[in-house]
Image 1: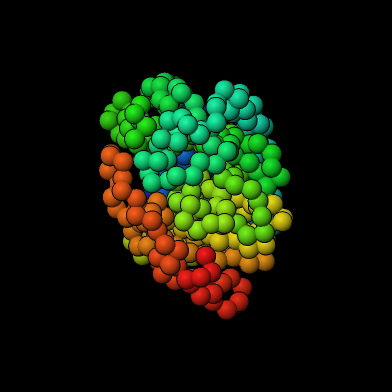
Image 2 (image 1 turned 90 degrees about the horizontal axis):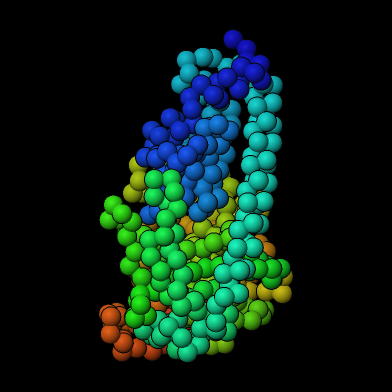
Length: 405
Ligand SMILES: [Zn+2]
């Protein structure tokens, strides 16, 4: 049996996308869409959206997205043709007409481009709201935001960090946004490689500033105390001036810990490991702990670089936390990030923190409680031993720690 483009469309709409994805992911209906935990990256709050009307899925956390065929390709490691054949098998039909497959691929691409253009327009509106929020903040020095950093053993306070005495925490409950509380907050601007303001990173704080705010949704689930608003994908939190050599880390606290201990290295925060690493090409090895899932590869996808840096940067030190829930993926993403930055800037190094820790844990030497910690200064030698060279991308010889960081 031959398939015309119309028949292929019919094949694609044979299952609502939410039904097919619902086999792998618990989805909740949110208005016209479905929401769930992303199958492509580890997360605790859902940023994975399925739109049955358009037949598209998208993750706002890691940038994964596409139609039903892309989903089958990404989750099963199939080529496009294999995905069509598999889907035809699920629908109980045969497939022979490759011309129709190509036509369907073209339509898919156009649909995705439309979706992405609409997403950009929506985010542009949000950037204006972020600029308004940012305008009402004050410099962090001497405020609760600096107190919070000092509780974490951090004595530096970059000019880019700001403080808001009271910000609302919005959370979607039964499809509607509700304010769960008002909290003091550390606010940092998100900037694209051009320097353009693209949003804000917000860290909600406890009212005594000794720790991050503890926020729970009505069903008792703990919610993240950090949020990024506006256009975070591709942006960086600039914790110091740009120069020829730059460090990149995931969070603000871990970035500042390395900056404090390893001057004059300036470290910028990516906000998430996914934004640091960007997209990848192909399919990685089977995930060691998650049956049926695959790791990312270490081959950067030049069309989805996520965070990029100004062209003046020549050397990038990618500093990875080693305390995440999905360590296998974290390790691959760290090397992927180093390869991406090496391809864009010439040289990059990947340096993971000590096993089970991030660089702020290392700075505090495990003493962190709710009292002011006794800070153990972290010698650069310690950092180097932990990092123990990991990668010099693109065939350059390994560098020697300590002494190079
Ligand atoms: Zn994701």
